[in-house]
Image 1 (cartoon, rainbow, N blue to C red):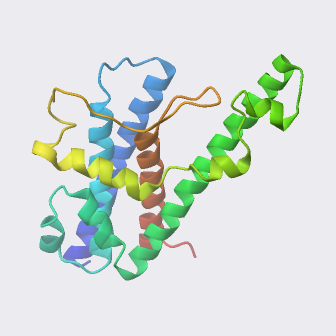
Image 2 (tube, rainbow, N blue to C red):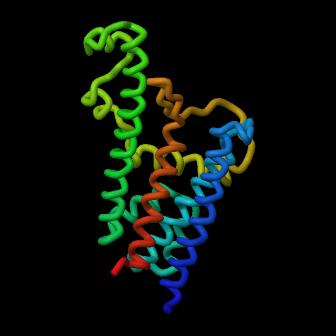
Image 3 (cartoon, rainbow, N blue to C red):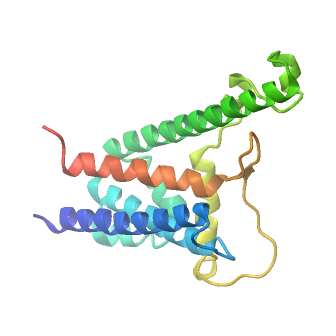
Length: 212
């Protein structure tokens, strides 16, 4: 096995360990089993997962380990380079589409459950009446879906800034997109990057271990 392929496999498997860890943390915080004052540790794990996966993908695309490491921790540059590289660019296009599909399905399911509750409470299933209570139709949900490329830029700016904004305590205000509708309170970059990492892990594993 050549060094580039070996390194790509190593990055992929190392990233999967980080992904498994951060998902355990995320599910534990969601269930209340783990209390965190800051969400930075979660983002640090997600950002490093994605960084390793993108480096693995660029090695698959033919870059040398030295060329890949020259990108350092700049996720936005790694992502942009992947989008230019043959087979890997196709992966990114599919991942962007699949993340949108997952957001659409997630929001539709939450909307439908919310609609059932509200229609009983209001005593009406008239869409025009329910719209006043925040029940959005499919078109409105589809027009406002989070975009992976925008989240990548947000994540990259914080992952590479000053040795990583996620690893060191930073004072001052910061922001992130959130979806607060249908009873949800979703951290958009956190969920978007988690789904993107799952999709990229699947793409890498399909490349290295294709099904017969």
